[in-house]
Length: 449
Ligand code: SF4
Image (cartoon, rainbow, N blue to C red):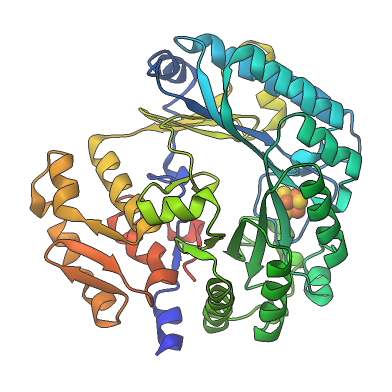
């Protein structure tokens, strides 16, 4: 049964970190539109910032991020200067001095920044915005290059949440993905972070990697639990060598198939939930004391470009090359070319390459998809009414869901949908039923399992 489900519903679908998804953005949206959207931001509402640092020391072969390998550090402070310049430029288009409730540094490896870069970045943000006293300041951290003094610099800059990239602790798996990172390295950095007062610690794990099997997944998950993280993200490796050429270095013969991926994901989930972690959406687990556990249980969980989040702002400003921003009116994406991004910002131009203005229909579908992805249920009739649409609006879509119901993935009561425990790993495939842009674009996405 499980084997046929993994194969039947494992076709490529988006991760729905946005709706509509990024492949549907167009060059029709540029700097001028972005400027008008920024000027119209509601002054009383807080915003969030995402700062992208697209540099790494060496390439992990599984990597799906927009990053560049650099050996000369001097490129990085120059790039950071541009990001801070862009931040100022964006702030001048806003209607007032805005309050910021979340800042997330991603990449690439944001911890390629030097300790002194963190302080000057925070000084600049404090100069341009009111950073809320309880703001979440989160960084993706590469433990392979971290030192105690670096951790102290992060804490001094106010960083209060860290995501540590792990993937797997097994040496054979690490070698096969070109990311050698002994368990002791991760454990030592976790201890340094706690000593420095940074106790909100996420671990990023992965299944579906070359050479992984059930024994390795059990070992990986047990070791992760020993570190007592506040959150664990369990991502399925997305093998898309047609989009990420370096993934061709991964031996495809060593990759688990769809059925094995399903088994690995559910085995890890079972171990984590039995240890008391709350399962969040389809790929996150939160310690009961972590705010994400409460958000999952009280309906406050959201989804944005970083995945599942407790950030409930309507506005996420993307800063840095390739960054995507979300505003009430739609999405914008900066130029992915670092050179072009720097050229535009140097000319005091908002460096937007493309975007999408959302329609009322997009907003309705986005809400339906977000409810399914976050809370695994949605009352379509109530949702349609709240968007002033007839309750029958999605009836033709529902008529295509017989297979999900027959296979035990979804319960439908009238127009109320509830994803079952069996269907949880496949919620992306169910959500895709509401994606009116999907047809013909599936090859751009990763497997649903
Ligand atoms: S450190 Fe992260 S962003 Fe950099 S290559 Fe590895 S996976 Fe990609």
